[in-house]
Image (tube, rainbow, N blue to C red; front, top):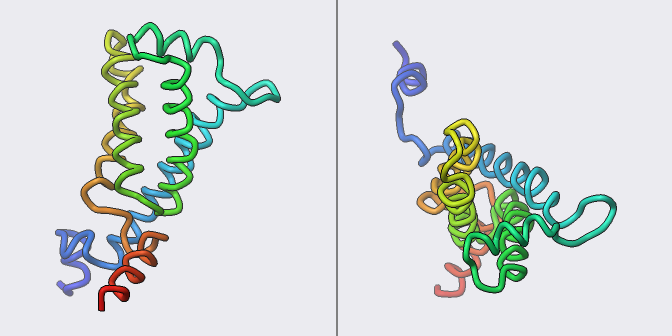
Amino acid sequence: MGNAIKNFLFGGAGAATRFGDIGLLFLRAGAGVFIAYGHGLSKVYRDGSFGLSGQLVGGVKSMGFPAPTAFAWMAALTELLGGILLAAGLMTRPVALALTFNMAVAAFVVHATDPFAVKEMALLYLVAFQIFIFTGAGRFSLDKFFRKTSAAARA
């Protein structure tokens, strides 16, 4: 059996390869676009106008957060702008940390008493965002250009 087939079937160098970075790109771009468009945008823009719904602010207030309007805006903008930044691979680790916090609140506070099927999407996003806390964006990202710039500045 050839090495390429063995590596495909049984592993290999994992994320340290070009194919691993392509996998990170697909996951990062997909999760970023989906959270930004599917969740963040709908929180800040609906019915032809910008602004948060009273239901979102009320929900944040019922969770006990201080300044519920400010926290609702932070959650909505984290999903919208954080999703865009994640998709682009810019400031990936801090953005992934903020998005992980958002999804942890969604899964374990908002949907705490709901059945697993309801909180499943928040948990899937949470796991995807955690991956980027540990791996970073990979080589196919805007972060890569800043790594090169700072390394060149140190030399």
